[in-house]
Amino acid sequence: MKKLTTQLRFDGRRLVLRNTSFIFFSLLMPVMFYILFTKVMVVTNNSAEMKIFSLNYMGSMIVYSILITSLMNIATFLMRDREQGFLMFLKMSDRGLFDYYISMGLWSVTMSMISVVILGGVAVLVNGVSLGLTQWGALGLMVLIGQLPLLLLGMALSFIKRQETLGVVCNLITFPAAIVSGLWWPIGLLPKWLQVIGEKLPTYFLNDVISSITNHAKLKLVDFVGIGIWTIILLAVTLLIIKISQRRGIFAGVQA
Amino acid sequence: MRDVIEVNHLKFNYRKRGVLKDVSFKVGVGKVVGLIGENGAGKTTLLKVLLGFLPDHGRAKILNSTPRLNYDVSSMMQGDLKLPGVTVQDILEETAAQSTSSLDIERVLKELDMMDLIHQRLTSLSGGQLRRVSFAMALIPNTRLVFLDEPTVGMDVNSRQRLWQKIDDLKKEGKTILITSHYLNELEKIADQILILKDGKIAFDGSFNELQSKYLMTTISFKTELGMDNFTNIDSLKNIRKKNGIIYIKSRDGDRTLQALLPLLNELHQISITRESLEKIFISMSEEELTDEKVNHTASI
Ligand SMILES: Nc1ncnc2c1ncn2[C@@H]1O[C@H](COP(=O)(O)OP(=O)(O)OP(=O)(O)O)[C@@H](O)[C@H]1O
Ligand SMILES: [Mg+2]
Image (cartoon, rainbow over all chains, first blue to last red):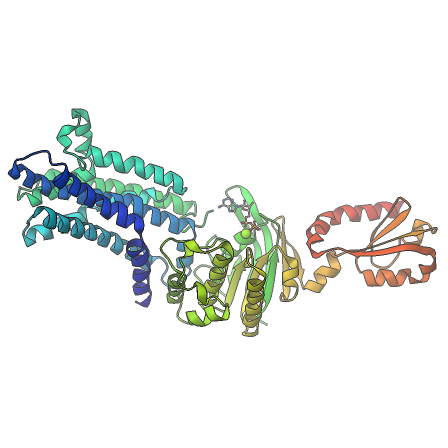
């Protein structure tokens, strides 16, 4: 128990409190985008349309924030911990890597919840967005489920060896995925063939579920199926990569 | 005496390349052991096998069990942790939480004169400072067996002294310590046992004095009217050659060779005696076979 609490404190400091990349790219930037597009560069005078847009864009920015956290932050931390031998160091202790993975998992979830709270808070304060308690609860729950494929993708990518390569790959996935799945501007503005691709991405499904929740619309089965399929695929890929790495002995940063 | 480390015909390959070919040695409890070898000799690899990170195929025993997941071992590896957002205190608390009998962090830092670093981020430390943090990390778990992989790299003179002082204290507490290094002279005072890893094998296993007398040559040179054959059978002779009218005698034991030369002293001029530095040992080891051939050759003429 002492070890788990120490591990949680240790990871909380480096992942959240002292993580400028998280604070800037996962929180500050989405907040700025949100204020910019719902308050400063307003495209319509219709207040009913505006109300829906400020709701939907809040959801989009939450998904965008989680995407950035999983791919830019968690992936980098996992990779660095292995490359620098931190996993090796932990492996020599009594409980091995158990507490580490529990702690990283809990903090990933917490980071997503921080995104929900911050962006939700800004939406409430700036645009007077109002949701019922059950809606907020459902939103939080969906974020928990919907981030699974993204976290798994981050975990799979963390096996990329060089930090530079990892950074490039994450950028190449994050920004196109954000645009194509309609997180930055409505997906209807994209060319048809891009929409077809975009509507199959996990970020699209999550964004769509959130939008259904916030708009009191009926939840769509296809969104859940989509998230489920992505989770299964990425889980399989991640497990495969772990297996291969373990066979090559590089799982805990020791290379054989 | 009980052995803390026992290795029998250990082999280890990275993919196809054999790094450890046939390694055998024993380390008794409470000993300080210096593991020496050139870059790429396999020192770090050997430590990783002993720690249980690489397979030993049942060839190694640490504290009477297989190396895998043996918790009474702490180690200072070659690479330092440079994790962003982590302070010295954080990483030491994390280290302390790993073991049940850990030492007090502040006490260790005070002993190593590192209290000024306690709130610094690992990413803001210099190379030598990081090395010192890694050393502190190896001390805090308070284990019976301590592995130190090139501990002094990048450390200044004071830090080195404190490190050797601390290792001496650990030795007095009865801990067993395995240190890898490229610098033989820093091991001279402290090591009870020297292991030299070369070509995947333990090329030398013994005390520092034994190492010295086996590999550290003294060269005695002089001019003389006497013929070479007066010297070919002299005590402790390793080899002999003549160049520009000067005879060079390479001796395994300078004192004994000199004593043997004493009766001839009146015939010898421009005598000079040079002792090889410790760092020459690797060169002497590779030359060994060659020079032995040379001696045989002259003898057969
Ligand atoms: N992960 C790896 N994959 C393949 N080969 C490796 C790996 N790690 C080390 N080697 C090789 O194994 C050999 C021994 O490496 P090792 O790190 O054990 O040497 P060392 O004696 O510690 O050297 P140094 O004095 O430079 O620290 C080297 O030839 C090295 O290139
Ligand atoms: Mg090494």
